[in-house]
Amino acid sequence: MDLSDGGTAVNVIAGVLIVAGVIGVILPIIPGLLLSWAGVLVWALLADTGGTVKWVILGVATVIAALGLVIKFLWPGRKLKDSGVPLPSLLVGGILGLIGFFVVPIVGLLLGFLLGIYAMEAARLGVDQAWPSTRRALAAVGLSLLVEFAAALAIAVVWIFGLIIT
Image 1 (cartoon, rainbow, N blue to C red):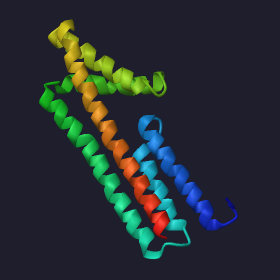
Image 2 (tube, rainbow, N blue to C red):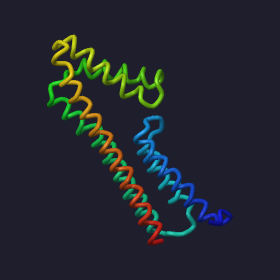
Image 3 (spheres, helix red, strand yellow):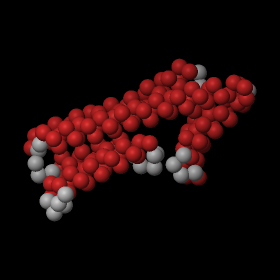
Image 4 (cartoon, one colour):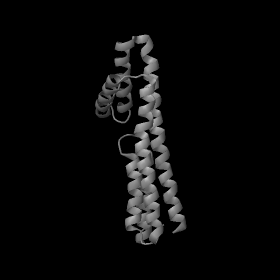
């Protein structure tokens, strides 16, 4: 692969950003979905081929990213609300998740969130009933991650399709 060609270099940079975004969905250190979208944006702005097609691809990627972000927050939030986990438990879980993110890199966000939910639900319902609520909260977080991952992969597929047809 000759990187002296501007188009190839742009494609490689965009591809690296997109792959980093997909990985970033799983590792919450980097904003995965936005990074994947940014890879398509870089490609659309800097690629010397593609004409109108690259702008259509960017538009499709933008719609996927926007839908992914909206669904990522609304769907799991609705499932949590329906499951009966109260807002104070979610808030404490969120705060401990943020603290955990900085204390224990990579997994601290999830550990802090789960610990916060479990502690609040144990205080509210008792230790025996805390785990089912915590498990429902974990399922909602998993759903959020799955939605974001699917959106990042869809952006990657759309970009690859754009590469093939341009």
